[in-house]
Image 1 (cartoon, each protein chain N blue to C red):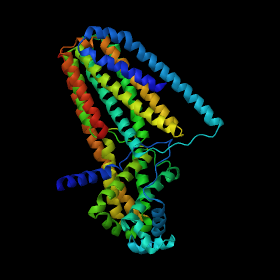
Image 2 (spheres, rainbow over the protein chains, first blue to last red):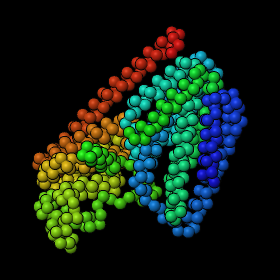
Image 3 (cartoon, rainbow over the protein chains, first blue to last red):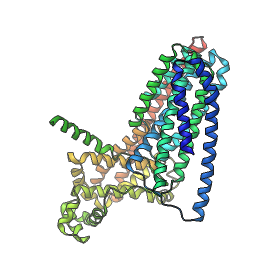
Image 4 (tube, one colour):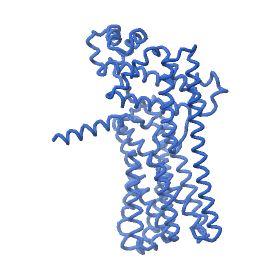
Length: 260
Length: 249
């Protein structure tokens, strides 16, 4: 069930990404009609199925002796530490972008205050989650912390100065990349689980929690994407230039933080 | 051909320490095997008992091999010779800290309430781990300083600094993660060197030395933190003043 959800979402995201550079109006319609409800539906089913499998497994392990758990290989530990590191960096950057965007944006458009506060609060919650995860799992934080802080603040502030549409286009571009990035991580984790289960090992609750956290956060990030599109992100001029620069920057930052 | 081979060797060299860097630590899934295999473990643990008398030498290794029921020649399974014995000491002493954590902190609970206090306590505990081999430790430091062993020695030092901060409950997730561990590595290494010449009862001088260095580190980080905070406050206050004057930034 979960892998098919991921695939569905990926297909939707891909559909959504391809045409929208050329057909902004049509795509707006597509997004609000198809994407927003489906993402919500997916998130709720995913969470429910997680919860049910979790409880049934707990019951099983109580009644019968539990299956063994496999030690993590070097590659898996590398993957997990770089995944947690890059997620913490990303959420740090997101909180800083919203912090920098809020004052100029809210000054010009007071009606955006609740939306910005809502998005900031969610990002701050994500940052707290990943901060505690990297401390708990002894993952080193990114060494380029000051650089990312500076760049994220600069990005948020400059797009907010360019106006409401540019700020929303920035949110849209960033959240598109982030949503895809989280999906890739979830897919790798599910592959790991499938392999363990095929070999007759059990997946520990630590990893079940991790994947449900990642799913929840991904859904919230994609919700921000919806909000940005609802608030005329596509009206930004020049939209294609702005979003492609920001998205290339995001991909570069993700690539770098996975390593450094 | 030659440059490419040199290049691969260079990348191998660069990869060697990074492959053993601090990685994801799982609580549910069993930990991977240690760095010593069974026969190495047997020989090294037996040889370690001869260290106070014979030092970190090939001789101690041969005696250990004989004690463990191997032939003298089987010290060949320990590829790095005396350095493996030193590494065995470093690894076992580092790993011994975690199980003793509760005992260490319950003994003087009133003293170790803050993270720096716990770091001091754990570092001292680790220094005491050198007690039995302290008179041989200068030889060991000389072997560790040989160019081929320097990366592994620094790596062990980094692992120790990380272990101490983890056990002390440090939760920094910003650049202070690096400065704290780097600072402790320097302080630990100098205290260890100081300890080799310390003749005071119970190594009291070493502990005073350690506490002085940690206090200096603490005041330095306070000063840097204070300046950073002041700069940040001034900058944001300046921006807010401009905003209040109607500048659209």
